[in-house]
Length: 420
Image (cartoon, rainbow, N blue to C red; front, side):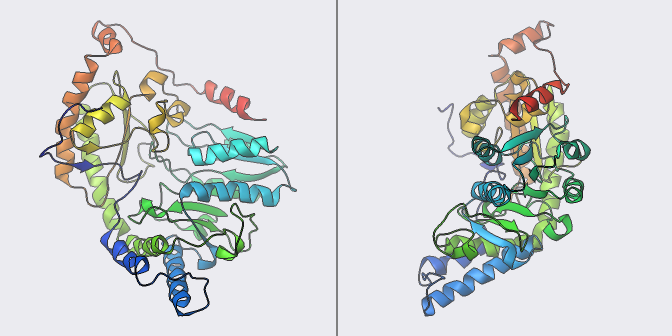
């Protein structure tokens, strides 16, 4: 569907939570391993030795980004694979101790779907609710831990609403009760400093495409000495924890991207947050009935999420795309499903408002001109779409088009229905 022309217009990319452009340094590091350095790291000859040295170096670089030991890094193909490996691998390795797993109601689908599979295998799953800002209450989570609880999985930060979880406190409570803790750090790595040793986390997932590395390279940090069942079986790659030849060019690119990101993270974050601060100040002045989502303070830098009442998110994306602006509406993994975000429903937004969400994630190369262009383009698009909305017509007549539901009773009802 097209609503206009994209010829000779300013082009703006505000969807860095879905994918970041590959930084030049990472691309330059990758190229030799797409050409002359094509050997397999596990071959015993000079071509293999060159590849193995590069693999080891990348493992060290990636480990330093999150202050981990290189032995704790398992290379995978995506955060989804890392999450699946963590959940299914740790559950399988510990099922003799119990079969109860806890996660939050706003986890990424690559956590929620494996949990459904584990339920079919006989595990029990409890999804704890979040408050209206999307934060888990650590004490409430701790009350759900049972003698047969073997694993808790709580994301570090939410990709849709930007909220950062009180992860250190959650981990401390899990430690007190002797329960393993996994965190999906995909949205966090590349935006905030991450120290898995300080966090004391058992397993942590993240991907290169979140910090200007290539797609097809990701990692699961696993606390050294912790046992995990492999998700992909076969050879002895990744110390038998993930079979199959590593995607060496992508892994090398991930390593170089990690190295640069660690050096420049604070500078990037400061710039990205400055741009988002301007958006946050200007948008309410230009668009009425705008609802910001996520925690107002404990959130990712460079991340802004909001709902525009009386407008459908999908229509907003299409019109903004025709203006040369790329933004998101919910997770990249669910944006084409035409469903309201489970995250926005979990924080108590009515369905009609949840379908009007926009997620803006700025990047290191965005400029003030990008922000100004977005601020110029969005209001007339919103006004055009609102004139097509029956809810907006009711609002103009002075009627209340819908009632806000801000309570959380429905979360508990949903949680009870999902626990088995």
